[in-house]
Length: 278
Image 1: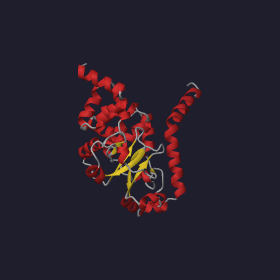
Image 2: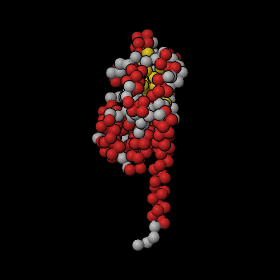
Image 3: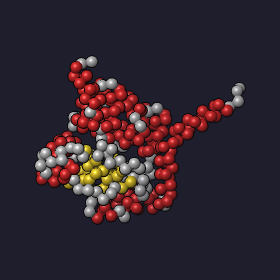
Image 4: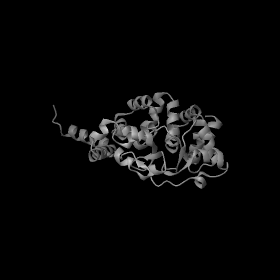
């Protein structure tokens, strides 16, 4: 192992969050190559510490088999958070390469019905870590070609801590200002499990054209735009499905995420043990 690689591994092992922020600032192919070169435990740790948007870009820069290898050993929720930021074809191909139990759990997390916010959000959305300063934020925005009006700011747990307008960030804020100092607080976020009808009545639309979307653990997974919500509400399946039915369906889906794979494995094991010998 080269001295440079040893230093990189030491830095990632000793300063996980700082290393993740540094990897996010690199081009995806370079960051992905580094992640695929270091030892597997550190690769997984680095991907888990990165913002899901950037982790997905690194995974997409790798051969499918390599990307699936890392997703297979992440917690299902972490793997799903990353896959929400991958394009549809890559997501399907990666899930197909996962071990069956992991694939089942991840697919269940991703399986929001179309009558829910999660099916209409935009997962390919940059978020900024609250520990960044304006100079770092500008670099990330330029690297990603981000051109939406609002950028959402998240903490190390990927929970939304506020937002900042792109105009203020790029033109008004001082380079050394921290994002925590210039952010605007968010009154709330839309849960991906919320029905479209309920989302339409959210008070956040009175001041914003885009709202953050979070999962059941309040982690940022994308945004919903008001125009897209209006478009979704014109679809016939939305009117045909009751609010309670949609909530119940997702409740089953999320319950499955938490325990179905283990339940299936236990049931099969018991069945084999109770089967009469042939």
